[in-house]
Length: 328
Image (cartoon, rainbow, N blue to C red; front, side):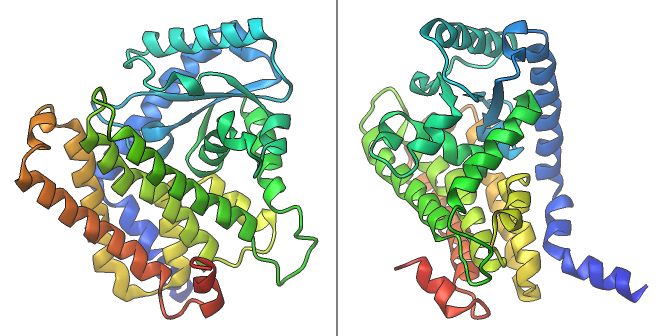
């Protein structure tokens, strides 16, 4: 009985997340829609080749879909594709997206097949951004779920993650700073991209801004928290984190941190995230977002949301050297 109580206490934050009813409903709906997508893709022979896999990122990958969610599809292959194959894959993705009733893909520059060799070769190179490998690689590790050929998905993900741990060599003092720096670079890139997108009259500023302050910051800093809190000295230490959604990754790290005083603020953190998701589903949000009242409210909620993450990453129980890595 004592062991059961200790085990429950050690998973307190995961239990809080699992019991948050609005987010629990979203996870169930996301899984229902993913099953629907998998069944449709399974019936499309073109996507069944063993050398390729499809994964979903975005709201489905994070397990938070709502009435106005779209589909973020990515294709990975273990070998380069011909131009004809690329065209066929893009057409197939469009057909799947339309058959499932989602809005047209908003950013078509990501509609291509990314081959494993390029994902590995371009890591940290100038071509990483220009060929969109950087974003695809980070989304694969941070918020993805497979839709086809799960074994190929795991094979590619394992090798991509292994690239970040190539200097590990079994040393207990090893810390995955290469991975940590790339995740932080992804955050900086998202912030810079927002400054460009805010001038696009066809894309509402509020949507990009609010995504940056909630879903993007969650995906990035749930992972930064895991890398900072957990004892990660080898690829095998971090690989299980890739199977968790950003919310579950953060909850797991909080369980390991073990500060019970964070529980109430964590509950508020989850409530704030659900508030953000509700805003995105509000059909009148485009007009509301232009008001000073909404902007002040959104900023207040976003500040409280990020303050919680900051309090975790600067927690006194964390070794000073790990906190230093986040700055220098």
